[in-house]
Image 1: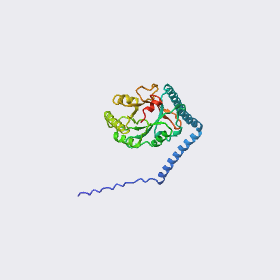
Image 2: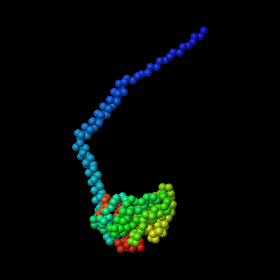
Image 3: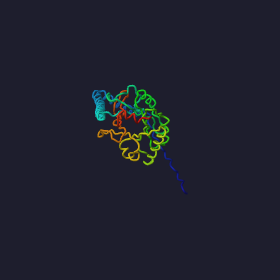
Image 4: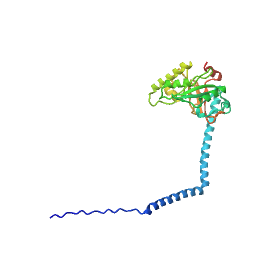
Length: 287
């Protein structure tokens, strides 16, 4: 006879956690954390004088560097302006300058008269500068020659951008010609396509205002992409380098600094030199 095999039941004993182990672990973690917090505060209090001196030194060091940079900029600004005695001097502004007290805008560095201002009006195909209306009216009240510029976005429709500028800016007799500001290279199109878009914007704006627009850009951008193909336009060139001491004969305007002080404006502002005197500048305004 075969004996039936009987399977032995295996008894699984579950280990039960002691009730106090969980709570005691949490208490231990809290005590360790509290110890380190008290240690940090204690060390901070003990060395408060040294830490205060360190952070004060760091902040003073940063402040001193900013003052030194400002001093260097002021020296260069004065040197450049002195070398262009007789030339007409102006500024350009946007919403980044905040609310401007236009009746106080009269001199640059409390010495050089401000004759004109370029004001940002539009950006791309859908954005207005938040301070354009106030700046446009304020400059007129202060009897400054004023001009409006459009910040061009390469990857957006050029005709829509021109239309937005036209709807926003109403030029009057004595205003400066409209300006196309191009600084960025395209991401989704070729340089040739970019140039087509720029020409469309320029043509549409010229047809509307009956005056040829000015092109604003950096010197490298001008040399690399625009100088030859857009030679029938007048250029406003930005170059802040110290090696550049005088305006180029081919440029209509030179933006030589972005760090200048003007009465009525908080913070820094861009400064521009016109390649001629005030009377010659008035000659190119809208009739």
